[in-house]
Image (cartoon, rainbow, N blue to C red; front, side, top):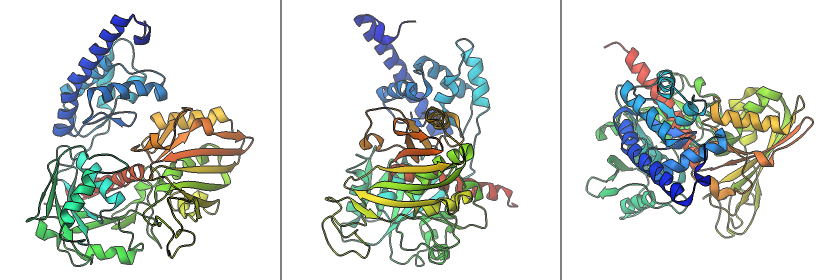
Length: 480
């Protein structure tokens, strides 16, 4: 069968128009399934909901890089019709996984079997979420929560808590949500109500609460109940400090978006999220680097065994650093972030053992802060218990990114052209750069890109979705 590239000019253009027409027909179906049934549709992690017809076609072609074949929009339409007819709700529909092994004939019957086997979820009521702090991570969490609102029965962003920065604070908060120098413009509409102190974003009504004391807020006065508070401030890192949120009426759980101290569980979704129990009202989502490297380390350790290793992170600068030289309580971080590579420490290597206890004491780490605003890289220099082949380990990680249990955490690329900005907005915890892999005997070096803002925020969302599911099941078990 000739490819579109091998067709005569007129035929190639008509083939493109035909595919574009089908993608245009897919848009309202994808939207309706999402709004009415919470069906989240994607191709190997690239979302299709709220995307243009051309972006949908790009996702279908992109599948060739990871699945060795371009997905046909005609086949996608068949699967969508099946999903619509079956009336399924609350599923993650990865068209890449379904269609990668689809037969050339009998696709509809095959699709019915595949869709029926997908795990579904349902909640009896929304789970309220409060963002305590509204910085880089807080605003990205807000964008994701607003974009994931669906039918309204999942996570529901109800409030943000900040210290008031002036009379025009509400306008500035809304503006920072609307415009982002790294991640671009907010996809949708934003309005503010100064009298009610609210931000309305794509139909999500967000109460802005001004407070500097986590114990002083009665969330129930704003109609918020059994909420998950996501603390983005980093002011408190231990259980005692974070438990202050639990003193507030309307709060049930707390998640810290930073590594925790003491006995707090550091959760890397996909690796140890199942360890969260009812006895854990306060947990942490670890760090961006820990989330990026732990899933990859787990795959390598399970396959080859890790004796010891060193993690070097080349990390974009953060708000913790100074733009130009000035006093800073941390060593070296006072020097200009925009002009220097800054060698500093990282706790990510040690923090891995909180999610993977079998690696306790086996990893060391350092960090180099560099003058880029987003997207970092971790270099994993590992000594293994057995010899490793470069092609074999790359294929293992590539397949994991496609069909493994950690496919939502690990992405894979083998492009010789990619640079850091190509990974802005990637929702995986880490992306293995296969072309950079080095293997010699029992020595392995892996290079892992990660969007230290958006990829990490996506992991935090997965953690609170898991907690919300736990809370919903607990409610269903309670006597009437």
